Image (tube, rainbow, N blue to C red; front, top):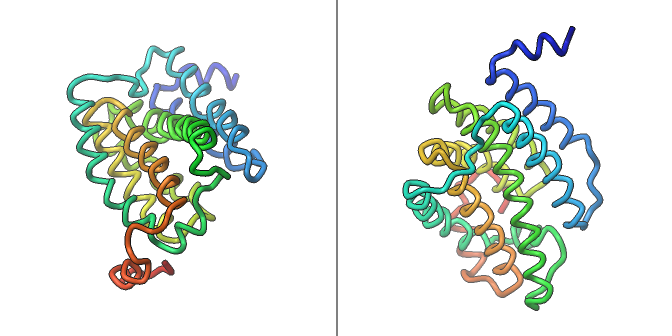
Length: 223
């Protein structure tokens, strides 16, 4: 009976139901601390395999497109977020938290770390911006407003400034991906930014931390 009811549901409702179940499963599935390989496999199974299978079964697009518009918007979004990563890498709270998984500046150590980090990001973007945004683009730009609260919730435990910016970032990435009909912009901006951030925090700060903290002291959070 339940299967028949689900089969009669429009794509939008199926996508949202599966998205909600996947989001809950991600929160409830325990993750061992410090194991990036486990995290990459865990996220790929939940955020790529499940949404991908659903989209394939229904002939739907989750934003796995690359064209001129997507490439242009990828460059613009990456340039826009770059200063945030550069400045953020000097904040004490960010430097204390990142890299989330152990690595070093030795390329033999950092490159495999970066590859797995990118897979985690591809999985996240396939879920948040793919299934829950580009995948339901028939409702218009408001599709970018579906996941910000969930995205912010999944950032609980990270530095306060990251939690504060997570929902607005989700909306920005969602809108850019919606206009691009592609998740490439958010994959490059998010994945490239995190890899750059990990590399930067392994080195001395680009900017004096006290000056950055003073410039951002108006924020209602500890830096």
